[in-house]
Length: 199
Image (tube, rainbow, N blue to C red; front, side, top):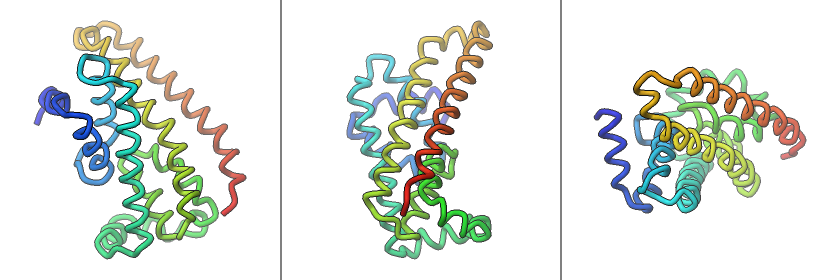
């Protein structure tokens, strides 16, 4: 399926369909969740959906997905544990002491790692992080993460013709880099705050 066809198919979804897509994109759909959010932001800039309704729909879908992963890992689900052990256990095992010490940082910052975002909820569940603290940190990350990608999708919607025509590409790249730098600076500031959170 091409990008244009994918965008058209997503554009046909209702809000409940968007919720299911947001829930599934975290663990099932074989394209990065970030790509889905960019497409949703792109479509939100047109007549498809209201952006103010779209954010809570996506937020609840994504956080429900994270909660599901957390609960499955906490309960020792065999399927999810087997998949984790096969793919990531060897990489995480030698850093286990550091992860246990900084689990709240891992929950927060893993949300911004492409295709590794499920590690935060999974590790939080395995390490029996209190549910309320997990939700607080995860929700805080999502409040930054979701609007960031929706905004980028919306921004590029208004400039898609210029991008396709080769006009304004440099400007769009610069704006994207600036946005990423601002987010990184914000994350650096927040890092100090989360460092103080005690288990």
